Image 1 (cartoon, rainbow, N blue to C red):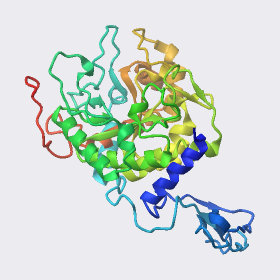
Image 2 (image 1 turned 135 degrees about the vertical axis):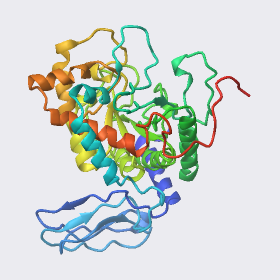
Image 3 (image 1 turned 120 degrees about the horizontal axis):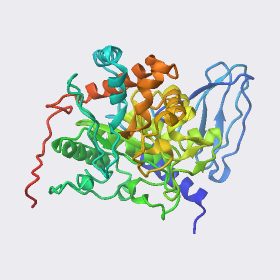
Amino acid sequence: MLDSRLTSALAFCTLCAFWAGCPAPYRRMATDATGGSTTTGSGQGGSVVITGSGGAGNGQVIVSGDGGSDGGAGSTGAGGTFMKMACGSATAEPLPYASGYTPDPGNRSMATSVAMQMSNTDRAQQMSGLPQSGSANYNVFNQEDNTSLGIRGWYFRDGPRGVNLNATADGKKDYATAFPVAIARGASFDVDLEHKVGEAIGDEMLASGNTMMLAPTVNILRHPAWGRSQETYGEDSFLLGRLGSAFVVGLQEYIAACVKHYAANNIEDGRGTANAIIDEPTLREKYGRHYEMITREGGAAAVMAAYNLVNGTHSTQNQTLLTDMLRTEFGFQGFVLTDWWAMNGSSAPSSLNPGTAADPLTKAAVNAGLDMELPWRYNYLELSGLVSSGGLQASQLVTSTARILEQKYRFHADKMTGYGVKPSFTMLDFNTFI
């Protein structure tokens, strides 16, 4: 059996061969405060050579190798910068249709204006799922519609391999196309095909009256016995980022995408209490890289915060993940929502209103950058009261509500009728199945 490090290296090399000369989606710039260093190396026998310069304030450090030539010495200098490349030095974008998200100024202005005029109760409605229920109601895939303001709630569906219409057990003939599982699609390395799968799923989402797909799943597959191994594309973060971006771009021709599960969510048993201890470089370069690609290239509308803890703090209340990395470093401009009931560290719903006992959890989540709790208005039922008591600022609710509304306006998901970016091509008939 191949060592896991070797299989990862082989996967990366295969990707580089397939997408020849692909650049990083985001070339992280850094400054060498102490001056450039000298690096030499030999390329004998096909070894990798590191060449470059750190001087003159604009040097590049590129990993390269031609299987025979010698690497020359890098020059020295003060205050040099470097550009970190994924592989090769191509100037063309491998996904020409993945241009990211450029906010519409009108949508952003309107979202901010409406959020500022709302009451805290209305803001809490936008920032959460259905009113908390004590019954065994598992139709938990939509928000409330705000009929007084004419704003439709989000209508969610699961399904990396197609639209899961049957999850609510409504007794209807809820059939949708079942595509090959993502792990099989990932083996193709075919970004254009994945783009078309995203388009088809987006079309069926809209035809069935739904406006946000809870996909793609881009967990890093660490073990084939992981309970959801079929939902993700594989173990390589670059592969996850490329295929995830292609899927999102196709899907968002119709409706919004929510990429999940952020971050380091690689185990199913005990996922609500698992604590991933990760050093800073690994967290960003391995477990964050594909989310950066999908938000920058694909322009995903939303990111789902996972159940697990990262370095001792739940993902749903983790400022390092939700603000420092996702928004500040990655430039994410959508909104963050929870996995279902994840704020409490469990996927099991509770019928008990936590009341003021939820205040510390709610404050930590809002302060960390969590915009929406799902599927119920459970801990976030306390939002209005916390503003009244001074535990939170009304401006924080305005910020989150505006983020949510901007994405609703972007995909016309706020409309009671005529929602979606463009009309669906297909039609859903609940009464027949051929």
